[in-house]
Image 1 (cartoon, rainbow, N blue to C red):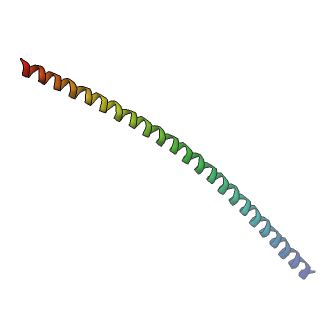
Image 2: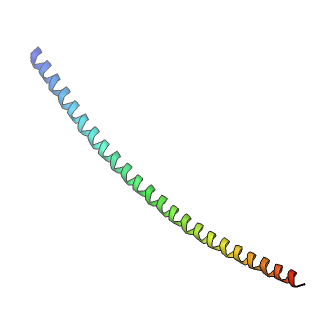
Image 3: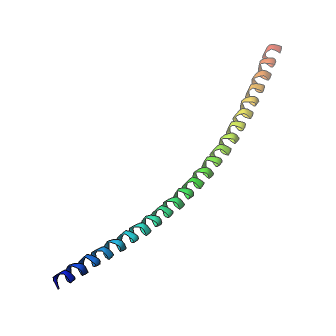
Length: 85
């Protein structure tokens, strides 16, 4: 009877350990999938922000170049007028 009880306890422990291993593997897979989805979402958002920043920077550089050109032209015209007088 004692051997039967020990055998039953061992089988119960073995089944319990196997069930826990399977649950842990499933939980690990779920966490990995969630992390992958989150990483993809963050990467997409960062790409969008970077593209937007690059476009804004390019626009700002063009505007600054135009303003500088205008200022240089005005200064040249003023210098010509000063030389004429």
